[in-house]
Amino acid sequence: MLTVSDLTLHYGAAQALRGVSLEARPASITCVLGRNGVGKTSLMRAIVGHHRPSAGTIAFEGKALGRSAAYDRARSGIAFVPQGREIFPLLSVRENLETGFAPLRRGERTIPDHVFELFPVLNDMLGRRGGDLSGGQQQQLAIGRALVTRPKLLVLDEPTEGIQPSIIKDIGRAIRYLRDSAGIAILLVEQYLDFCRELADEVNIMDRGLIVHTGPAADLDRADVRGYLTV
Image 1: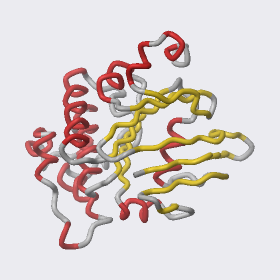
Image 2 (image 1 turned 180 degrees about the vertical axis):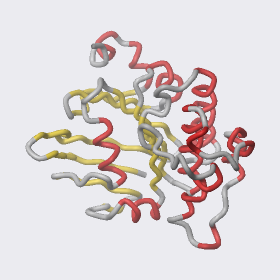
Image 3 (image 1 turned 90 degrees about the vertical axis):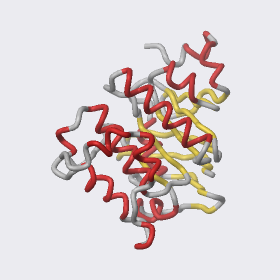
């Protein structure tokens, strides 16, 4: 579904990514782990079109994305749930979800039933402003908004950050459903090791802008692998 090859990215003279390569497959959860500041968010934003790489290629469904804009990638089936959620605080829950209509044809502009099946609280709060929701509810709203676009690839940047344990479990169940029942390819940036161990089919660990380890989630129990993640 997604192939990243030898990706390099700079911010001015600072180099954030150094020849990163990874894959995300349909009906599979690929987790990217690493300490703060190693380039995880830069990688995700390059994939969805928010940052332009200096070198390397990103291919989606076998087609190189080149310099295509973020909105074109959204139309092709790539959805992004950014770190910090970035919902619209003054819009209602319904209006936030409907912003996901933008890449869809007019006849497809409906909210899929599974959004409310996965996150019933959103259905209960359709008229509430997004800014009035708790942090966990806002995270559910951000994921729901991404699902409205009918993605083939869902990119999530630290969806458990600052979220209470009960909602982390709800998010985990939703991600499993999207993999197992909807067949979506999921690329997940995370620092919560237990969450990643329970969900991931493959883990990629980053350090200083590089992928330093790729393997199954069971590798997170190895001392040498955990050494990349300790401060």
